Amino acid sequence: MASPERLGFQEKLAYGLGDTASNFYFQFFNLFLVFYYTDIFGLAPRAVGTMMVALRVFDAVIDPAVGLLADRTSTRWGKFRPYLLWGAIPYGIAGYVMFLNPSLTQHGKLVYAYVTYGLMWVAYAAINIPYSALMGVMSPSSEQRTSLSTYRFVCAFAGAFLIARLVIPLKNLLGKGNEAEGIRYTMLIFSVASVVLFLFTFAKTRERVAPTAGQKGSLGVDLLNMLRNRPWVALFFSGLFTLVNAAVRNGSLIYYFKYVVHDEAKFTLYATSGFLAFIAGAASTKLFLRLGDRRALMIVLSVVNALMIASFYLVDPRSYGLLVVLNVLANFVVGPTPAILWSMYADTADYGEWKFGRRTTGLVFSALVFSQKVGLAVGNGALGWLLAYCGFVANMDQTPFSNLWIRLMFSVIPAALALVGAFAIVFYPITDLRMKEIEADLALRKAATA
Image (cartoon, rainbow, N blue to C red; front, side, top):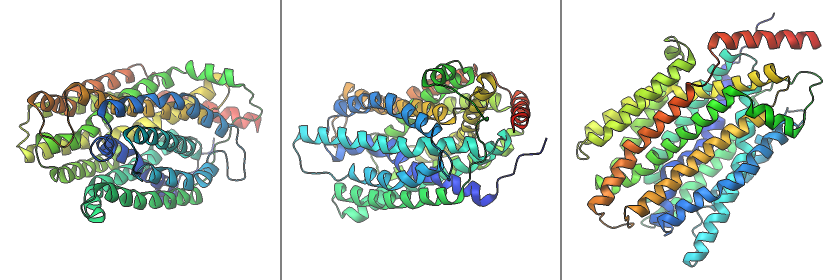
């Protein structure tokens, strides 16, 4: 059996830059969106929390629909690549329009937020689900996909680093005292950059894995097989709780520094140093993998990270140096986990083809992306509801009770959610050795039908 074609540096980088484009939006929403809606756009925290959860109802239909459509797409560019070409400009426009900040009544602003935030996630699904699924068909090798996933998340968190480093300075520079204008111009820059990067990803990547010849199936069968795919189910719940954890903690950062530390400017160094550590951890994925099997490594790294997050509750908010150092360590430890996790996502598509005789890469990835979007929405929603519960009032000194809950959202609450996400990985049944056996079996089947 011939060895799979090795992916070159340029193609891996081109694929990774697609997630830089995704993270210009994803991380902006993660770090600043609730803050933008409450402190700049002027919406009530409870209304923001409810909106973010309510709109995920639409994703329950949109995300699988995009995945199913992509699986059934056939063009000279492949199944998934053309969506990067078709979706790049709508994606850029949708992200920019969210922050136009029109002069409306309170009710009008809420309606505007619902409509533009909802359209944004439609555009995000249309491009990001095929982009994510593309990794599953660029190589039949789990080892190559893990390498590809490493490039992806180094680039992803390079995008996150740029968001953390540049948003507040750009907001202040471009807005000249007007925060709404500053955010609008800042997002214009990132929107244009996202379009360019997605088009580059489209131009420089290739699809190499085709479904087995003659495979047949229906929507109902595909959905049933996905739910019977035990590795996929385990990763679905892990992704869900991981993103709830990330949304609560990352969304609380700006509140923590503005209202607990009482120095919003310190957010930038704290966040950017953390993202640099995360990038370093992601780039070290291959070294971490020498320690053992991906599944076991995911569990250990996630638990260690959770304990570090919880320890922030014990740190005096005035001990800024200690906050930064602990954040760097926690992010380095967790850095390899996204690359490992997404390579495992691709493995579930192989497992589904091996187990049920039908490859549904788009559907598998769409449902996993949906779990992460639900996690982000629930996390952001919980952030809004908890702010309302503790009596938070935007742009005012907070009560001791409010400050306590902001500290909890910064530490103990996301740590508990991270532990639940790690626990879900316990039920993932595929070892690295078993995955190599599945790959070899699939290659033999395809050779027999060629």
